[in-house]
Amino acid sequence: MRAWHFVGTHKDFERVDIEEPKAGPGKVVIDVKAAGLCHSDVGILEDEKWLLTMKELPVVPGHETAGVISEVGEGVTDWKVGDRVAVWPMAELMGYMVDGAWEDRAEVSTDALVAIPDEVGFSAAAAATDAGMTSVGALSTAGVEQGTKVGVIGFGGLGQIGARVAKLRGAEVYVAEVNESIWERASEAGATRVAKSITEFADVELDVIIDYAGYGVTTADALKTVKSGGRVVQVGMGKLEATIDTYSLILGRKQLHGSMGGSKDDIVETMRHMASGDLQPAISEIDFEEIPAGIQQLIDGTAVGRLVAKVAD
Image 1 (tube, rainbow, N blue to C red):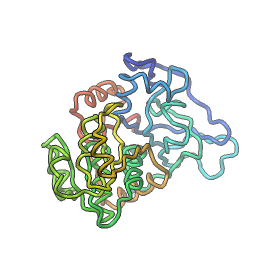
Image 2 (image 1 turned 30 degrees about the vertical axis):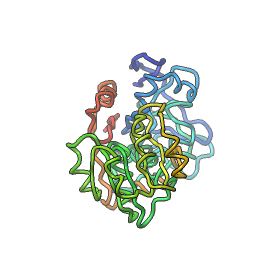
Image 3 (image 1 turned 60 degrees about the horizontal axis):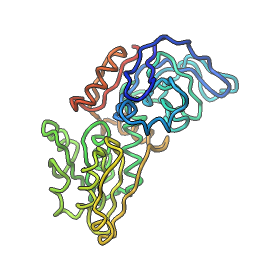
Image 4 (image 1 turned 60 degrees about the vertical axis):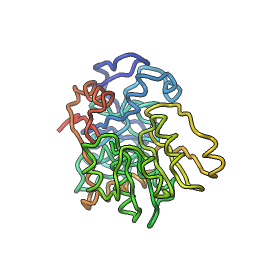
């Protein structure tokens, strides 16, 4: 079957043909229909630190997975062939410790399965498993609720979901996004104001700022801007280092929290909003064979919304 392999930092992904998986005990095999692309897929190509998260190489990347069960293993009783499912990537660190979604068929633990509502397509479901889970999980880490003044840095694959769900929770949302061409979408999602830099909201007294970009300076700007006693939640990993102003951090009694991934409940919440029509994130579909070109879009900053590869119809 078709697959893409990660073979090492600073090396291109390799298109390969590998053996099809068999469903082991407590596992299923999924015919992958849609597989998302993430900025962390760029990160593994550029920074050796990512190797610490992986099993021995090569490994099939891809941690946003949606498809149809085609085989069930011994002891599996709650799921059946034909079920439409998405995969919670945190269960087995899919795409890192086990082979991920960039393949025609994937073996998955039943602990990771989430049923896809009838109203949600495969591409949206794939995006829900990481872009949705991680953005919504960060809202919980941040304590976003009715009346919270929340700043969102980056209105890309994650930020567009985080901003919208924050609004649905009753928060007052302020979006920082360098790409002015998508400001209108941010406003349509419910943003009170949109600007290029989070520092432009210093007068708002933001309770919390969630940095979905993570390019170093964005983290530093967030800590300077959040109100005294406020909280910055770091999600984006555009760069793995940042220089921060500890003067502002300490004297302002501010908090800096890291947030990685999320729970199955976060995926369920994301798909519930998708199914109702309240959440309609921008998703750009590409062909499975175009995954390297999609990665280049992420590098160049030209991707629109969340990139998802269609693996099969």
